[in-house]
Structures are given as C-alpha cells and as structure tokens.
Image 1 (cartoon, rainbow, N blue to C red):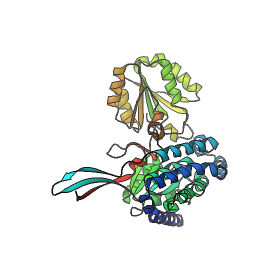
Image 2: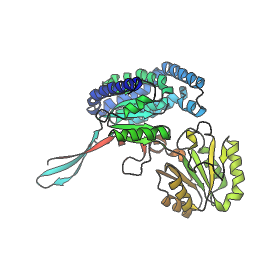
Image 3: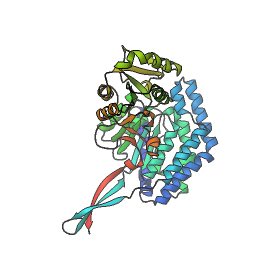
Image 4: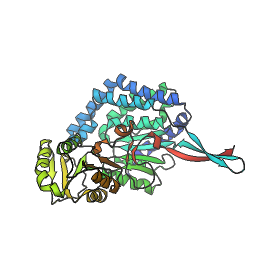
Length: 414
C-alpha cells in the first residue's frame, strides 16, 4: 500500500466512524427535525452563496487551467440560478411526507402478528463525479432517509464541495438538533479515496457510485471483492427511434429537446431511423443535427452502436445514426447494443408504439417524449442519488430516499 493509499484509507475510516457514531441521531429523529434540516439547507444555500460561489470560481479556474473539457466544466459550474434551483428542490423534498416506517402484514397462528418495518441502512457512502450540486442532492436524501453518509466527489469539485459541506450542510443539521457529523465529506483528492470507500463493509456497507463508465465499473468490482454492496450508475445514453408515422415537426422537437445538454447520461446518444424513410428523411435529420452543432456518426460505424458520446470529452457533440427495420428491431437494438438506460419511439401509429414499448426492456421507455425525462426530479419530483439500470430485483431507475432502506420482519404478540 502506498503512502497515498494509506492516507486515503485513514481519511475514509475516520469519516465513516464519525458518521456511524452520528447515525442514531438521524434514525431516531422526528419527521419535523428531518424536514427542518433539509429546509435549513435550502436557506443556507442563499446565506452561504458568496462563499460557495467563490469556492466554485476557484474550481472553475483550476479546471480551465487544466484543460478540462467543456462538458466537465458545465457540470462543475455553479451560479446564482443553479443555487436557486438547488434550493427549490430541497424545499420540495422537505415537504414530501415520509412513508410509514411499519405496516402490519398479517396475523400468525398462536396469537402473533407479523409487521414489516423499514429501517435505515446506517451509513451509506457515495462517490460521484465533479458536480457540486450532487453534494447537496445526496446529502439531503440521506438525511431524509435517516441514513448517515460519507461523500466523495471528483477532485475538480473539492473546493465547492467543502464549502457546501461546511457552510450549508453541517450548520443545517446542527440547527435542526441533529448530529452535524452525520454527513461527512472526504477531503482527500485523488482516486485512492474512491477505492478506499468501497473497501469498508463493516463501516460503509452500501456505496452509491456515479460517474464515467470505466471508473464506476472498476469501483463496483472492487466493492464486490470486499463485500460492499453498490448502487452503480456507470453507463447511459438515450435512444430515439423514428417511425414512418412520426410527425416530422414533432420528431425534430424531440431531437432538439434531447440534446439540450451533452454531458448528461439521458441525452440522445443513438438515433434509429426506420429503413423505409432512411433515404428521404436522413438529409433533413443530419442538417438539423449540424444546425445544433452536432456531428452525425453514420454507417459504416467505426465504434459500437451504443458508444456513449457523453463520456468522450473530445467528441461529445456527436450522435450515432443508424437504420432499424421496425419497432421490434429498434427495441432489440436498444436492448442489445446500449446500456438499457432509456429509449423512446416517435410515432403517430399507436400499434407501432405499443410494439416498441412491449419489446424494450430497459429502465425507461418513452413514446413521443424525450429520454431526458428519465430523471428523479422530472419524473418523481424528487432529487435522485443516481439512476440504477440493473436487470435484477432492487431499486431501478431514479434512486430516491425511499429506496435507501432495509426491510425487517418483526413478529410480536397480537
């Protein structure tokens, strides 16, 4: 183990032990205290705006000096409008009624009753890309779910993250009478801390992973090797299939609205055009993409159909365009060649839409709607910790505070 690894491991263990000691403060808190803390975070974003924006300005300057890609810098940037949007989401989350923590299942023989309870995990880790807003998103959801947390962000956002932790999150917890150590931030830069976070099953049994595909997959594998469960959001890329019945103007609007941001996972990545209209529609589509500053990658492709352009900092302004033989084939391509995050069909033909929706097995399926809607706040009016695309039982799609709990069966006398 290198000196860097040792330093990172100690930083993670120190933070995790502090969070673990503080976890009962959240688990036993009244709903009013939990919601008061989240509301205080919302107000704190306004009060601490000068300090947060100054820290973010330093992060942005360092990112520009380092030559980080435009998409990375867009995700890193905070401004007054983004802080207001973050605060608005927190206010909404604070107003969401918590689900009952227990429910009666049935009576058992012998005068007993079976109850199902939802319990906090205890301490949840989170490793995410250099996006300062995610610090508050995840911290607030952990608090809402009554879990303590250990957060680690990309090094490019560390100054912003520290300002948010120290000026917004910690004071909000204290003001609500909760232990401010419940949400801990790893302040050690570098990937060593990310790997250290997924090697502590006794302290941090569950870690939320977000970020680029390769690094997130590697962290998930490392966690599995050490007995840490992960909710990993490694891959993305939205798919849109244009059926011959689609209204051309409506299809054009879908294309534009799916490309409003290029560095996000649910943007348009693969555009499938029905073979019957390939020759007649393709010129107009490529012209539209060019007008949006987007390069169309046309057949024959020198990359996989599902190649995720959002993760390619040098070529993120690209959309793969390919033919499909009909709704079923388009859905099969989306199933087999992409991550399974989200796919949609543009069609006026209800039968064609039904065929596509029945065949597509991914996380989010859309008819005449953009895949950009696969987002916790846009779908559920709740911030998300990430989007889980696992094809096994468990939370799938946008993961919110409601998913961050354990089921417990309790048998008592009736």
